[in-house]
Image (cartoon, rainbow, N blue to C red; front, top):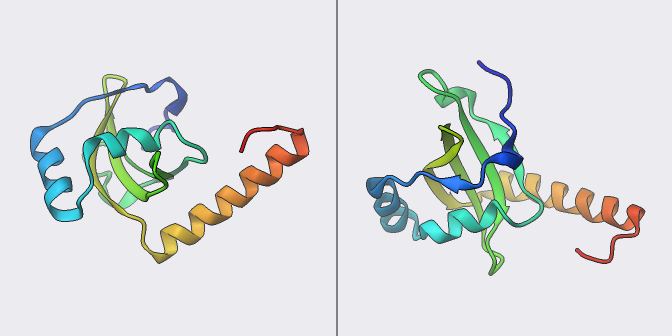
Amino acid sequence: MSKSPDFNRLQRFDWDVSNINKNKEKHKVEHQECEEIFTNKPLVFIEDKQHSQTENRWGALGKTNKGRLLVIYFTIRTDKIRVISARDQGKKDRLAYKLAENLSKKQSKERGDKSK
């Protein structure tokens, strides 16, 4: 397993049409929603060791511009995010995300940030 990539430098997506269609049909998630979570805060990354036998895979817990809570599983290819699957967050995902969101708000308040 390689070290964690610098997620901040990943700004582009490498889309596979079959994955776009699969996520839309199976989970009603549009590919634009997947991209949105990478620009909204907080964004929580998790290592997906179970599915990382042939390539490193990651999960991301985040929210869309409309507040929809999603979990995205992806890999990185040539400095691009390649989404493998996307779905609504489950109960455990929401709990982890809520903890991260509360921590982020607390840290912002401690810094005196005006934004949320």
